[in-house]
Image 1 (cartoon, rainbow, N blue to C red):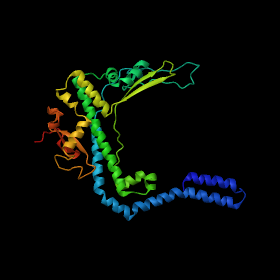
Image 2 (image 1 turned 180 degrees about the horizontal axis):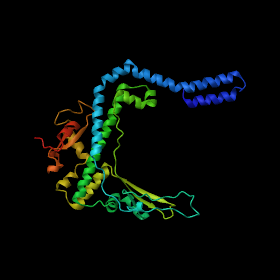
Image 3 (image 1 turned 30 degrees about the vertical axis):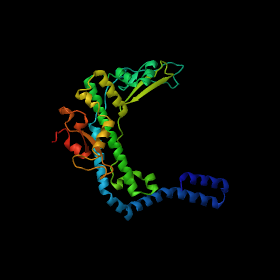
Length: 332
């Protein structure tokens, strides 16, 4: 019985039963005993469930699924560790740490004030700039965070876009696998509610707390007195990065170069290549039909580092294992 209900019953007993009667104290003791015993009972039920033949059998049956899941989690962590998710930065307030600020006005020293944030991804600007950034975000991010329209910047944008796209797919794949494992075991509701961490530990699953680290840029206006503040936030997720790539290609006219072609490596193109290859790894021939949660990646046959372009004839679908093994090698 939930604790809040028990507390209501205890309150009702205090109101209804005279405090001088023996039945009152018996009621109080009984309710207190239930309050104490309730968590203990749950722990006993948990241990009985995890020790049951039913749970142990299911755990054995899905051992290979769990092992594959853990391999993908390790792969996700490798992508996150190798990835670099930085582009430009703002110079506003870059030396603010060298000074100290204190509001010494006697008339408002007790009031909460808006304080300007000082960070590389925050640009403190006029109210007009903050509002303009909300209507033309790419233009203002490029202007105020030193994202220049040149070949090197385009390569950086593509690097970040590729890392984020791969990480998005991998994180989504891990979550699907965890949902599938839970569905296969179908534990009692109280296990997932009260003992979720213990459940995954007993199953043997390595949980991945990794979230996609989208770069976020902020334009912030704070009035001189701190009475008001407005902020425009721009998250460099996959659609924004692809739009930024297209904008850079138009500005620097690198459309026929390797950097320009790399800007074509969009989510849409990745999906087209996987569909063209029937969602099958062209190296080991494993497909989504064989393994519903297979993590597929799009690989450059001739690596970009060796002059390869992001065009369909230079792209192939590989499973994450084959792609990791191939790396930047040219395979005949």
